[in-house]
Amino acid sequence: MNNQFKRIAIFCGSNTGNDPVFPIICDEVANVFVSQKIGLVYGGAKVGIMGLLADAMLKRQAEVIGVMPRKIVGLEVAHENLTELHIVDSMHERKAMMAELADGFIMLPGGTGTLDEFFEVYTWAQLHYHQKPCGILNVNGYFDHLLQFMDVMVERKFIRQENRDMILVDSSPVVLLEKFIAHQPTPLMKWMATET
Image (cartoon, rainbow, N blue to C red):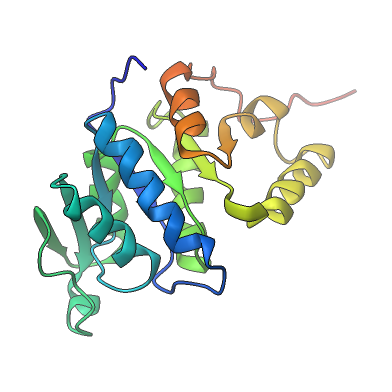
Protein backbone atom coordinates (compact mmCIF):
# COMPACT_ATOMS: atom_id res chain seq x y z
CA MET A 1 0.00 0.00 0.00
CA ASN A 2 1.13 3.53 -0.76
CA ASN A 3 -0.33 5.10 2.38
CA GLN A 4 -0.67 8.89 2.63
CA PHE A 5 -2.69 8.93 5.86
CA LYS A 6 -1.06 10.17 9.05
CA ARG A 7 -4.19 9.80 11.18
CA ILE A 8 -7.70 8.42 10.68
CA ALA A 9 -10.65 9.26 12.92
CA ILE A 10 -12.85 6.38 13.98
CA PHE A 11 -16.39 6.88 15.23
CA CYS A 12 -17.65 3.91 17.27
CA GLY A 13 -19.71 2.86 20.24
CA SER A 14 -19.27 3.66 23.92
CA ASN A 15 -20.82 0.22 24.49
CA THR A 16 -19.35 -3.08 23.30
CA GLY A 17 -22.55 -4.51 21.81
CA ASN A 18 -23.47 -8.18 21.93
CA ASP A 19 -21.47 -9.60 19.01
CA PRO A 20 -18.18 -11.25 20.08
CA VAL A 21 -16.59 -10.19 16.79
CA PHE A 22 -16.77 -6.48 17.69
CA PRO A 23 -13.81 -6.63 20.13
CA ILE A 24 -11.88 -8.79 17.65
CA ILE A 25 -12.27 -6.21 14.90
CA CYS A 26 -10.58 -3.63 17.16
CA ASP A 27 -7.42 -5.74 17.14
CA GLU A 28 -7.65 -6.13 13.37
CA VAL A 29 -8.01 -2.38 12.85
CA ALA A 30 -5.09 -1.72 15.18
CA ASN A 31 -2.90 -4.20 13.29
CA VAL A 32 -3.70 -2.52 9.96
CA PHE A 33 -3.16 0.99 11.31
CA VAL A 34 0.16 0.11 12.96
CA SER A 35 1.41 -1.71 9.85
CA GLN A 36 0.77 1.48 7.86
CA LYS A 37 2.00 3.87 10.59
CA ILE A 38 -1.46 5.45 10.94
CA GLY A 39 -2.45 7.13 14.19
CA LEU A 40 -5.94 7.00 15.69
CA VAL A 41 -8.20 9.96 16.42
CA TYR A 42 -11.28 9.02 18.43
CA GLY A 43 -13.68 10.21 21.11
CA GLY A 44 -11.33 9.68 24.06
CA ALA A 45 -13.32 7.17 26.12
CA LYS A 46 -12.03 4.14 28.00
CA VAL A 47 -15.34 2.28 27.66
CA GLY A 48 -17.06 0.29 24.91
CA ILE A 49 -15.61 -0.33 21.47
CA MET A 50 -13.93 3.07 21.82
CA GLY A 51 -11.89 1.86 24.78
CA LEU A 52 -11.09 -1.50 23.21
CA LEU A 53 -9.82 0.17 20.07
CA ALA A 54 -7.70 2.68 21.98
CA ASP A 55 -6.21 -0.10 24.12
CA ALA A 56 -5.44 -2.21 21.06
CA MET A 57 -3.56 0.71 19.52
CA LEU A 58 -1.73 1.62 22.73
CA LYS A 59 -0.66 -1.99 23.24
CA ARG A 60 1.16 -1.64 19.92
CA GLN A 61 2.79 1.67 20.96
CA ALA A 62 0.76 3.59 18.35
CA GLU A 63 -0.41 7.20 18.49
CA VAL A 64 -3.88 7.62 19.98
CA ILE A 65 -5.46 11.07 20.21
CA GLY A 66 -8.73 11.48 22.08
CA VAL A 67 -11.12 14.43 21.92
CA MET A 68 -13.77 14.63 24.62
CA PRO A 69 -16.25 17.24 25.85
CA ARG A 70 -15.64 18.40 29.42
CA LYS A 71 -19.10 17.21 30.52
CA ILE A 72 -18.28 13.61 29.55
CA VAL A 73 -14.86 13.75 31.23
CA GLY A 74 -16.78 14.55 34.41
CA LEU A 75 -18.58 11.21 34.10
CA GLU A 76 -15.19 9.48 34.53
CA VAL A 77 -15.15 7.75 31.15
CA ALA A 78 -12.03 9.51 29.80
CA HIS A 79 -9.08 7.26 28.93
CA GLU A 80 -6.11 8.25 31.11
CA ASN A 81 -3.26 6.75 29.05
CA LEU A 82 -3.59 8.30 25.60
CA THR A 83 -0.86 9.97 23.57
CA GLU A 84 -2.98 13.14 23.79
CA LEU A 85 -6.40 13.91 25.25
CA HIS A 86 -8.00 17.18 24.16
CA ILE A 87 -10.74 18.48 26.45
CA VAL A 88 -13.25 20.71 24.65
CA ASP A 89 -16.40 22.54 25.69
CA SER A 90 -19.01 20.95 23.43
CA MET A 91 -19.84 18.11 21.07
CA HIS A 92 -19.60 20.60 18.20
CA GLU A 93 -16.01 21.41 19.14
CA ARG A 94 -15.22 17.72 19.48
CA LYS A 95 -16.39 16.94 15.95
CA ALA A 96 -14.62 19.95 14.48
CA MET A 97 -11.32 19.06 16.16
CA MET A 98 -11.53 15.40 15.17
CA ALA A 99 -12.19 16.46 11.58
CA GLU A 100 -9.21 18.80 11.64
CA LEU A 101 -6.82 16.22 13.12
CA ALA A 102 -7.78 13.36 10.78
CA ASP A 103 -7.02 12.59 7.14
CA GLY A 104 -10.07 10.32 6.78
CA PHE A 105 -13.04 8.94 8.73
CA ILE A 106 -14.27 5.42 9.47
CA MET A 107 -17.44 4.32 11.25
CA LEU A 108 -17.42 1.12 13.30
CA PRO A 109 -20.48 -0.31 15.08
CA GLY A 110 -22.07 2.11 17.51
CA GLY A 111 -25.28 3.93 18.34
CA THR A 112 -26.85 7.28 17.54
CA GLY A 113 -23.78 9.29 18.56
CA THR A 114 -21.67 7.27 16.15
CA LEU A 115 -24.14 7.88 13.34
CA ASP A 116 -24.30 11.59 14.17
CA GLU A 117 -20.52 12.00 14.00
CA PHE A 118 -20.09 10.02 10.80
CA PHE A 119 -22.95 11.58 8.86
CA GLU A 120 -21.83 15.08 9.77
CA VAL A 121 -18.37 14.57 8.21
CA TYR A 122 -19.95 12.75 5.26
CA THR A 123 -22.28 15.72 4.68
CA TRP A 124 -19.30 18.06 4.88
CA ALA A 125 -17.62 15.95 2.20
CA GLN A 126 -20.69 16.23 -0.06
CA LEU A 127 -20.52 20.02 0.33
CA HIS A 128 -16.74 20.03 -0.24
CA TYR A 129 -15.90 21.42 3.18
CA HIS A 130 -13.25 18.70 2.98
CA GLN A 131 -12.18 16.04 0.46
CA LYS A 132 -11.21 13.32 2.92
CA PRO A 133 -12.53 9.77 2.48
CA CYS A 134 -15.47 8.57 4.59
CA GLY A 135 -15.85 4.84 5.12
CA ILE A 136 -17.92 2.26 6.94
CA LEU A 137 -16.40 -0.94 8.34
CA ASN A 138 -19.46 -3.16 7.99
CA VAL A 139 -18.67 -5.73 10.67
CA ASN A 140 -20.90 -8.84 10.44
CA GLY A 141 -23.47 -6.91 8.42
CA TYR A 142 -24.10 -4.43 11.22
CA PHE A 143 -24.74 -1.58 8.77
CA ASP A 144 -26.62 -3.58 6.10
CA HIS A 145 -29.98 -1.96 6.82
CA LEU A 146 -28.47 1.51 7.02
CA LEU A 147 -26.83 1.04 3.62
CA GLN A 148 -30.10 -0.25 2.18
CA PHE A 149 -31.81 2.89 3.45
CA MET A 150 -29.13 5.01 1.77
CA ASP A 151 -30.14 3.27 -1.47
CA VAL A 152 -33.78 4.17 -0.77
CA MET A 153 -32.73 7.83 -0.47
CA VAL A 154 -31.09 7.55 -3.89
CA GLU A 155 -34.20 5.92 -5.33
CA ARG A 156 -36.43 8.65 -3.87
CA LYS A 157 -34.15 11.38 -5.28
CA PHE A 158 -32.85 12.81 -2.03
CA ILE A 159 -29.24 11.74 -2.67
CA ARG A 160 -27.37 11.48 -5.95
CA GLN A 161 -25.83 8.10 -6.69
CA GLU A 162 -22.44 9.84 -6.96
CA ASN A 163 -22.82 11.12 -3.40
CA ARG A 164 -24.02 7.74 -2.15
CA ASP A 165 -20.91 6.18 -3.70
CA MET A 166 -18.70 8.54 -1.69
CA ILE A 167 -19.22 6.24 1.31
CA LEU A 168 -16.55 3.55 1.03
CA VAL A 169 -17.71 0.25 2.51
CA ASP A 170 -16.07 -3.06 3.32
CA SER A 171 -16.05 -5.72 6.03
CA SER A 172 -12.24 -5.97 5.97
CA PRO A 173 -10.04 -3.24 7.53
CA VAL A 174 -7.30 -4.03 5.00
CA VAL A 175 -9.59 -3.68 1.98
CA LEU A 176 -11.28 -0.56 3.38
CA LEU A 177 -7.89 1.11 3.81
CA GLU A 178 -7.00 0.15 0.22
CA LYS A 179 -10.19 1.92 -0.88
CA PHE A 180 -9.15 4.97 1.16
CA ILE A 181 -5.77 5.05 -0.58
CA ALA A 182 -7.45 4.81 -4.01
CA HIS A 183 -10.06 7.46 -3.10
CA GLN A 184 -10.67 10.30 -5.55
CA PRO A 185 -12.77 13.30 -4.43
CA THR A 186 -16.20 13.54 -6.04
CA PRO A 187 -17.18 16.76 -7.86
CA LEU A 188 -19.66 18.97 -6.05
CA MET A 189 -23.07 17.56 -7.04
CA LYS A 190 -25.14 17.82 -3.88
CA TRP A 191 -28.34 19.07 -5.46
CA MET A 192 -30.57 17.28 -7.93
CA ALA A 193 -31.19 18.87 -11.29
CA THR A 194 -34.84 19.83 -11.69
CA GLU A 195 -36.56 17.37 -13.96
CA THR A 196 -39.03 18.77 -16.50
